[in-house]
Length: 327
View 1 (cartoon, rainbow, N blue to C red):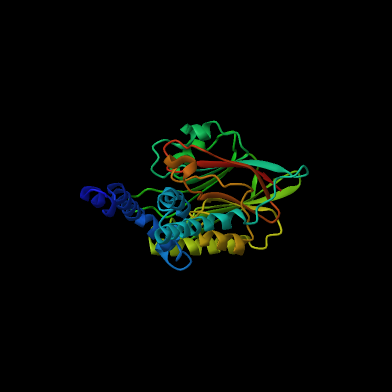
View 2 (view 1 turned 60 degrees about the horizontal axis):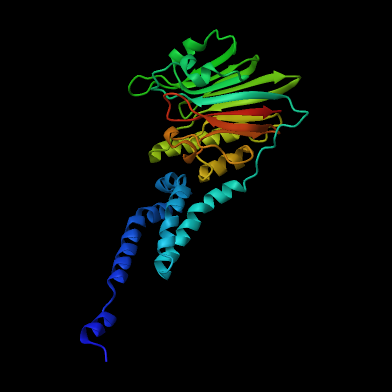
């Protein structure tokens, strides 16, 4: 017959079990913000906060994987976490199956292009940035560039043909704009504003073929009003290039990632396609490859994209991108 103290040990909940249960509850509570983030992202097509959340759902899903492992024996909470992981990964799966631009073929004329958001508060002017100083590409596209950057690049023999365009001065008086610098002559240049932000629309010829280049920088969507301005800007860009019979590329800091509904609207309405393969993360720069892709080269009208890669830009919160364009 067991001693009384032995019976008590059998009937009382083991201390290790209680500790494990408390640990699982703490893990679930800690995971609540990630679960809420993914839940909010489901409203991305109609709610401003949902659209912002949609860019980061894959990150939330990855962070939830250890939580799912810890809660694998708890059917209800474990199932909820697993569902959240699936929902968080779905936008990336959708983007992965999106139609992509072809690679440049053997018969294509090709141009190389470098794009960089150099950051309007960057203390280093464009020519002194290592990414620009070392650049030998046919085209250089700059975003958030200012008059000091223009002065430093004017007369640069690498790109004798240049177009610079600026938006309205910011509240602190800073002037920021976009630039297209080319080794080859630019023709049919149109400078316009979409939602008060500058757009450069130009053409370059090589070997009897013409490539249209549209440099853009829509509003960043930190506030609902700015998101609406960005979406109107993206719609204007899409209208301007939709159905283009000539090869065209849209390049710039587009301020939306492939996880966003706004991205898919732009591509669908503008008949635009991103480069094949994973799109390199460009923002924020300190996240490196773990960031999100918001700087893009998109192709339409039969244009092709190859050799897309990202690189650091000194003093900027964005990484730059370079690519080879076929047309």
